[in-house]
Image 1 (cartoon, rainbow, N blue to C red):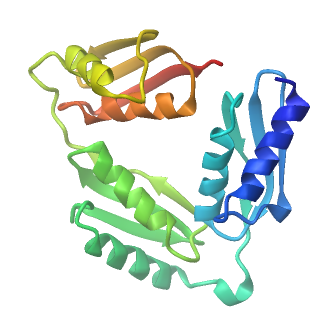
Image 2: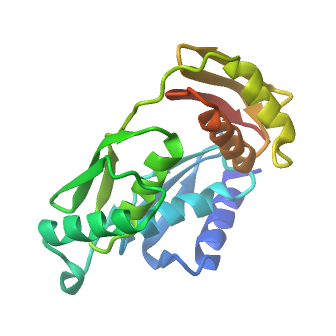
Length: 216
């Protein structure tokens, strides 16, 4: 696929997504299928949605999301107000453990504390990113999971086989002391995300090294 065609497809996808105001977003693609997003959006959530939309386009091998969050004056909030909203939202979400805390500096939320599972970290990050007035989210949550006694590698490969979205023939899984390393190639970002999610879901996994390539 020529890069000009890829740029047009990404622009069309951004325009098509009702969660994104694409008027101030520019997409550029290189010969390897890597797409760079530049411009401005009105919220951090919108920045993330733009990145996800670009990933959905066939031919995209990587995203460099350089979008800037610019919040209108009437929508700006004090750091203390943002922190209160983040903490309240996390309290109301049963997937976020009470061991996670948040601080806010200049609209940037920093999540700290501990969690037993990666999905709990992801949920806290998701909740914080959705709060109005947030410019960015930094995840410093530590996982307290201990390495599992069983064969993590085989349990992950079994999870791959059960997943209808994933063709794992070209994926190699290595595991050591709670760290999982994924290498090889997948044919879409959907497969990539499914493989990484499956690795994180294995008991005892505290770190996932994502070396997967998206190849069309």
